[in-house]
Length: 164
Image (cartoon, rainbow, N blue to C red; front, side, top):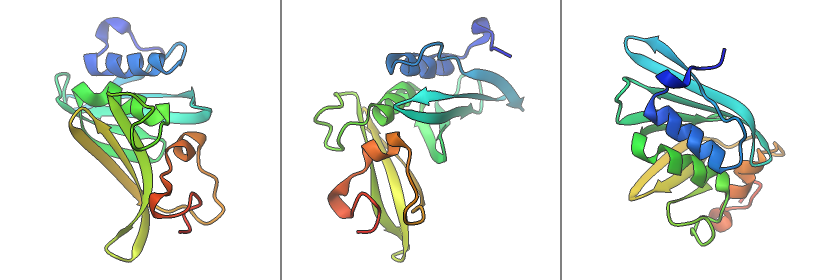
């Protein structure tokens, strides 16, 4: 069921505007209550040559921070004011030095180690003066990443295949 635009939360409308700015036609998040005043909005479709799932969750209609899910990455405590910039920075796919992805945000995925032994990959996004990050285990060798993830890979600390 399509969400009613008259009940659209401003933060959800901002996420939709970010998707439209990235060329997504008919970018409408399905917004619904999630109990105890919380809400949930999600969308899936084609973006940056990838099949993408995007979800936004908040604790109230006037929330200042949200949880953003991008496929299997989870960014916690994203400022509602930065949500659109975070989305566009991730899917614009410029280099991590920000040279071609504009002044409003930048994103990269790098290989790191958690607890000194566990290899993980970290999605780091800058929006305004804030930094947001999410980590997950490295995929098994030979596993293909989404094109949007490939575009964000930073070779500075390992190979693009995660083997370095």
